[in-house]
Amino acid sequence: MLLLFGSLLTVLLITCANLAGLLSARASARQKESAIRSALGAGRRRLVRQMLTESMLMVSLGGGLGVLVAYLGVKALLAIYPTSPATWTEFGIDRAALIFTLVISVLVGLGFGLLPALQFSRTPLNETLKEGNRGTAGRGTERLRSVLVTVQIALALILLTVGGLLIRSMRQLQQVNPGFNPEQLLTMQLTLPRAKYAEDEQRARFFEEVLTQVTALPDVKSAAVASQLPFLGEDSAGSFQIVGGPQLPVGETLDTNRRTVSAGYIQTLGLQLLRGRTFDNRDTAQAPRVVIINEAMARKFWPNDDPLSRYVTFNSDTQYQIIGVVSNAKHSSLQEEDEPTAYTSHQQVTSRTMDLAVRANYSFDREPAALINAIRQTVSKIDPEQAIHNISTMEQQLSQSIAPQRFIALLLSLFATLALIQALIGIYGVMSYAVAQRRQELGIRMALGAQPGNILSLVLRRGMKLTLIGMALGLMGAVASTRLLRDMLFGIKPIDPLTFAAMTLLLLCISLVACFLPARRATKVDPMNVLRSE
Image 1 (cartoon, rainbow, N blue to C red):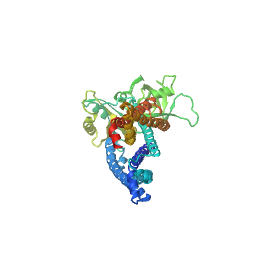
Image 2 (cartoon, helix red, strand yellow; image 1 turned 90 degrees about the vertical axis):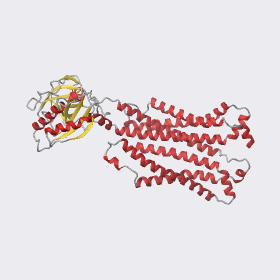
Image 3 (cartoon, rainbow, N blue to C red; image 1 turned 90 degrees about the horizontal axis):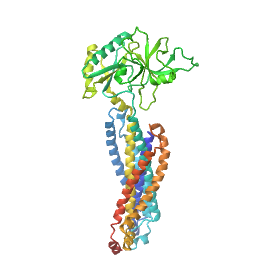
Image 4 (tube, helix red, strand yellow; image 1 turned 180 degrees about the horizontal axis):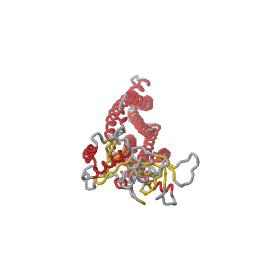
């Protein structure tokens, strides 16, 4: 939220700089009007009040339009993420937002309208009313507009760089292998009533019957149940002990995530069996307890040993024999490191609430959600009082897990685009105004033999000078600001040469176009018309 608010303030600063440049240019162009009003008796306070009134009217209309765009924008953002938390529906244009907009509009109107108003009221009467005076701006005013454009370019480059880093980080995150195959995988949850399924054996029998009948359905390749499927809840971490292992100091424990799964879990999710075997019909409640561990657990606790046939305990005296090692899988976030995980058989240790994973055949040409009705009817046949809930596809769960990062990247991209557009408007406006003010000079240069290429180079040189200074400042600001993104980036460094180079080149090319248009217009100046008008 701080990052988004900082980006918002950056866009606001660019807008204010554009507004100040616009009002300053208007004040310079209206110097003769100011002189005539002063000659007719208007005092300085009245001239200042007139300019402030005009600027306040302009920003008020802009603020009102901004409220309308924000109202539509909030609805669009909620439509983009329809599965977002319920609290998102509380976002909207309320009294606080309206007051904030009103205060910002007033402050912008007063703060950035006061300087041009003072400039308008200080017009030298005699010099301005002389014949031929066109109300050209002084060096101080031109310098101010140049500074404002430089600031806009710098701020725009900072936002572009931050947005580019987050977009690249987002792409890196989307390419992370979760460790299992999410395609054609449908997930749902079953919660058994405590009174009806009080015994472990009853619960295990019910889930086994569900798996048998669901797997027999057409278009179903396999099915499995687990106390917690990946990306469907918090990790269930706990401590364990290695039988025959070294004695731990007092207060220290060995920790691992623990999940209860059915025999077809490894196959259904697409995990790889690296060593040993998976659960089967031998692993009943009466059989010795067994456990399967993932590769991360094997490497951490048995780095130089084979964990197969070793025994562990989970906060009790019951020993579990390790019968297999499977590949790692992400469980809560694509950004997380591979953590130790132990899988126990649901026939030996089961739960009232289990997640059901159903993988459709790869030849199934519809979404996995098309199987929901058939699965619901199957469960109802086994127990008419039992219902399935929390239905979704695994691809939806993966997409939802990175929704916050995608949302922030989207907003920052929008802010960066706004900043870029406004910075280009600013430099285009300054160059257009400079060409209009120097029309006489350019006409004389062409009359004395200057070629269109010379005029083009003259105007471009000034615009690109402002652009390069702004980009140098922007690069320094980007280096400083991106260090704050260290915890938000994945797979790339805060100072990523490719992102910095790409954003700098983009801004340079577009700024060149913005400078070229006024420069090209300057080459069309007719020397005869200019000299005749003088």
